[in-house]
Amino acid sequence: MTDRAGTPAEPDPPAAEGTAAEGTAPDAPEQPRRRRHWLRWTALGVSLVVLAAAGVGWWFYRKLDGNITTDTTAAAELRAYEKERPPANVSAARNILLIGSDTRAGEGNRKYGKDEGTQRSDTTILLHLSAGKKSATAVSLPRDLMVTIPSCRKPDGTRTREQFAQFNWAFEFGGTACTIRTVEKLTGIRVDHHMVIDFRGFKKMVDAVDGVEVCLKEPVNDPAAKLKLPAGRQTLHGEQALGFVRARKSIGNGSDTERMDRQQQFLGALVSKVQSDGVLLNPTKLYPVLDAATKAITTDQGLDSLRDLYDLARSMRAIPTEKVQFLTVPRRPYTYNANRDELVQPAASQLFRQLREDRPVVVTPGDEKKDDAETGGDGADGKPDDADTPAPSVTPTFTGRNAAEGVCA
Image 1 (cartoon, rainbow, N blue to C red):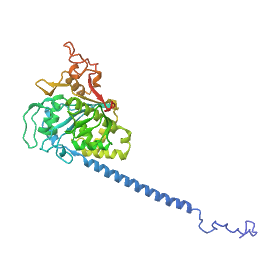
Image 2: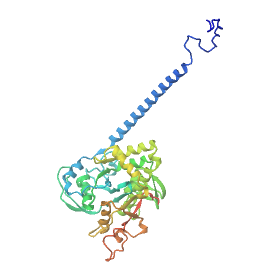
Image 3: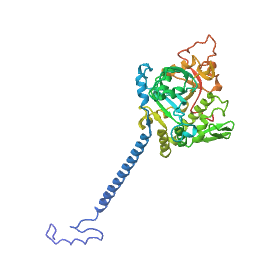
Image 4: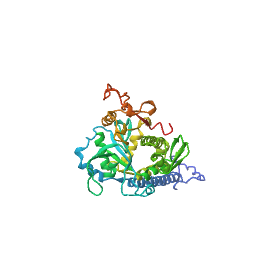
């Protein structure tokens, strides 16, 4: 080899150890090649994990979605009487009827009594969710309230006659559809959706959130409710929780009024527990709650999917607990039978109008105002010169509580 001047060039130095001589493939590209291989395998592994997670997520979704029982018979009966029903809401507000069934049929319910093929609504609550997710108002309807029950279709296909009877007979006569029509006739409020839950479902919901805390002023021993509890602060689980909300004669003054108040306290505490970040943001806690909830309920076709229930739960989550309110419709002992109830007017009509028009309702603890039966629900003193209807700028006030108070408030 020569240089440009034709003189012999210096021989090329030998290749250093560890480097490639000219004409041979250098080792340097091996590092990028190994890195590319590693990245490919990493990407493949991540993809498989994502696909597996998606598959598991889809399996969970399908399982939870399949847990929900759809009530198709109520829809047909309600369509047949569409012309009699209140008009549908024009706003985004929704009204959901929550029904606790005392059926003895099915696994976990037989031990509460003999299954005679009938059921009544042990608890009925009209839940109003305001437009804009500003508030939720749950109104308890007494089981012994005297109301007009319309002619309803019975399970055997025959029909009952219209009659004046205690409210919870409607569920026995014609199930959910008959109860909805009775509520709509009573309140003038359109029921958009409904949910039915039995004893077993309630217990599973409480167990899924690891119990609900209550406070008792004195010990309870109620064989009929299968409940025996010491006094003081304690956490109730499934069977005890069911006994607590169903007990009547062994707690307090033994009235159904006090039992409804106790149910409202308990549900408020349950709502607070479910809304807590410890449940909603923890998949290991959230899944059992969802599994129990979806197995526990029977709903109309508008709420029979996990997506529908998720949207509902998200709406509830956006409402502050102090704006989740519980109250009982204003009532007093029925004139002709002290063991039954009747509405107090004009308080009941004021409450129904506020909900129907999606206007505010304010509740205060019972010790801050007189009983609704005495005040008329809005703080009036009951004198003849009181106006039946409050001024437009006045928001009616009723005895009740909110979810932020809890059972031990």
